[in-house]
Length: 132
Image 1 (cartoon, one colour):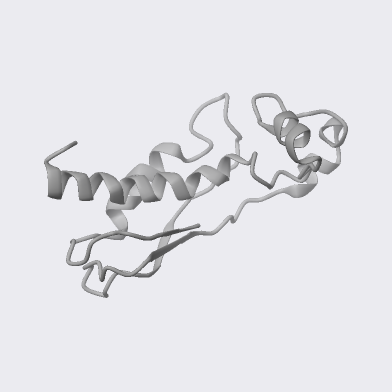
Image 2: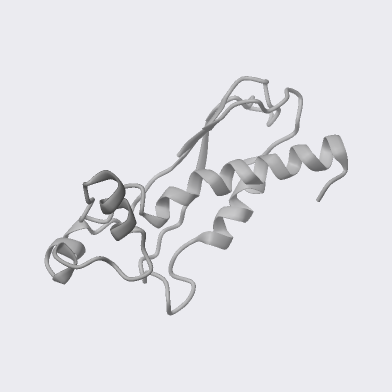
């Protein structure tokens, strides 16, 4: 999830507007991504009224991980080898720790918060500066 601060008040915002961008980054859509079928359904926890208007307070959003399989990483060579196309090696070199079970800063799920916040930023830029 993510907490986005600095969003102006009185902007119409729906969960569906954010979901459009999350659906674009959702896994399981090509042969080179994980086959897991994650819905990546965003929940807006705060900062937006029940009528879909931003309040000017931080917007907290959550996407639950429903198809995690930590065992997939622990029961094969991933416990001793770095995952291809992931930042495991870089993260290990920089911080000296690895999240072998698929989590941590090198998880693709870490991008969910950036995408959700970006969907809101795009709307703010369009409304205030006519930038798409």
